[in-house]
Length: 502
Image (cartoon, rainbow, N blue to C red):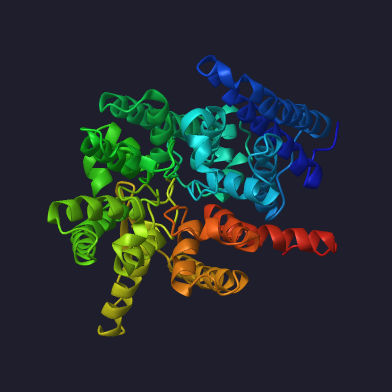
């Protein structure tokens, strides 16, 4: 009997499976040639890296683990594999941009990371999204990467093939929403909901008058909370359209659905509204809406960006939803014109972020709800008799759940870690850009990178290569929620020096 495959042989065998999938995703833009045959000259930009990745990945999988009994990944090896998967995907997926001469290495990595991490920060030359130089295949390709990154590389592969040890990797990518007992069936159901919301967005945008290609790009970006557009002006390209108001409402709807935990969305679809709307995350989001939408509106109005209160209401409301869902769409030509007050409100909202188990970034509403509850519990207990024990409950996924001290500590620890990385990242940008970027602008740009929001004051475009690499790391760290990167480096370093992992 053959010995079960384990360790790095197992890890690289799994990696081969993911590399082959990335190769398939790289080939998908070629189907757009049926609609845009005049761009056929770009076929090799996708074909060469796509086929190469499929061959390499299949070879790795077949040579290392195919048909063999698989052991369990070692402690933190799931994080090592996760980091390898995402870095490999970014490297492979950046090659079409470089082959076509659209980007150099740094910009290709930046744009690809932004797409996979569903951030929406972009250094793509506007000429490729307008007029005769429009590159539909590359705009669509970037959107496909956003679609894949939004739902997660692990989840998509899990929906196709799964094994009894796949759950650790699935959870490591940030999924906490098993809708069914079987992991693969749960992943397929989540993927179905994700695709369904995307199709709904496309249909609604087309009904509102948006061309089909633009509708596909904006719907995918909205549900993935990615913020990419098919136009240099973003959704403002359609500002003169008579149904622009409808397009904004559709965008808000799809952004909110994308930033909602898929299990809660499943409850809503199946009519279990009470279970969904009593959840701590949706309750907190409702409170944030009641408090901050008026604040955003007033901040826009008093910024002097507009003297029309109705226009300020539309801009403030849309900006709130764009920031709180960490999408990055904007219904103003230049968000910096809304004033520093609005920019700081955007930073505050995208730090909080959307629901856990959604496509949104940020700290996540559940961790914030735990932090608020923790403050309430500690305040209550500090004034009570020491002989009285208060249970710590929170409403989660349709039932009242008892929260232990370790879960609360983990949430508070992550909030501290997130805040520390945000501050350090902003300082680094201000330093490496040689004093050309103020700390306020650096903080705004890095907060949008780490939270996967993508609203920008153009630091990513005007800054140097070092600035883009800092933002690239922030985007990846934010998408993987920081800790898997630490665990991967920790385990990899100990393995390198042959030390036992405890």
